[in-house]
Image (cartoon, rainbow over all chains, first blue to last red):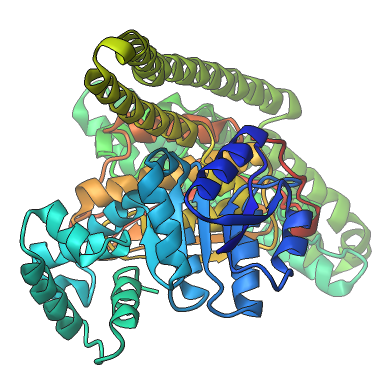
Length: 213
Length: 391
């Protein structure tokens, strides 16, 4: 898997390169500002990108905008966006830029090296990985259609799905069997009126409904 | 400042209009005298409660008469004549209103004006009317009406508005007060930041380096324990980062730097546990300090909506018109909100006061609650927004 990496802090860039290469990724381009990022993303050899939101020269949301632009030009291009802080607003914009293959995580999550690498891999495979902090914000909203049809446990399961966890991981987190998780997920699909489809797409759609995209 | 078009005296219509004013002023002398006498009698009797009964209707009458004369003076002179009265807070009971009036120097000026208007003023206006009505003095009226009525308007203005010096004195007093508030507020903010950093991130970093130190010692003897300590250290560093994020949000939310007020308010709305409709029509960005003050003001209002209103729905409207940036935060909750009850709103008012901003709350019992924030400022064009430095 050949990646484009954008991070302006030299130490973090070197760290992320080392970490990702250690987990079997190839860093095709490691860039430090938005001008170089645009060039790197235009490279047809790139298969996915890991981007910092804030980049020189303006230090606002260049990384996020680059992610949305590249996904307009190359639909479904997998992008993992990293940031010092997360906003539900940005998560919504990223999710609206195409179906799936999006990640949005706090930089702190990199500390859990294995899980971070797994997250990048899941995004590259078309999944959705949202930071638990975004998920918690959305969970605090109580009276939003059609999510108010879900039971508390189903909401919990949907939250973990939004974080990008697999059925096995959800079962582990909630200390239930995988079969019970599958049952909850089916109930969620039914209640959110999601048509029968390839499983991954339904998962992504459920998460989109969750964020009211 | 609103502009007032002067009556054009060269035209016959303008002269007739000034004469009409003179006639109105002559007729208004009667109610002015009544209001004056009743106010004086009421004032004397106000040692007993009966006097207050006189005052609660005579003073508003005096205000009304003064306002009519202000409007006529404004048209005659072609300059705005503001009333400059201290506004009576809505919901003030009768006795409270009398106290507000008694403390307002403008009320006393209006009383003085009433005496002059009923004597000198009456004579001047009467002269104009007589010159007009007695046909033989037509020429005198033609040339005299404008200077005479301007003199009358100047006399009214002298009593009914503050002079330049008084205005400046008042401004200095206001500025001194708001500056002291701002200094207090920022000192309190710095203390809060210091405490947040000291109790949060700093303490956690100490714990982190302790865990790492212990792990360092344990590596050879007890690798299992060392691993546990390192994983503890990681959890602590995560918590420290979380604390720092909270502190940064309190200083200047990153989304405000990225997206400006409209985007940041949208982000706020998404974080609230109820649907919030955001309508932002800003063609540019306000100056950074105003933007930040308004952001925190709106954040406080929305937090109150989430905590106290019991609302199903809320809305935020942002617009910039006639040089005033206005933010309206409304909800369909139970109403009855008191902006002076919490320290949060007082902080917001102080911060806005630094920019001559105002906050008004309308919250009848049963709702809806509508908070209006207004700051006079110019918007910079979106293209020329200066880039912020490295964060």
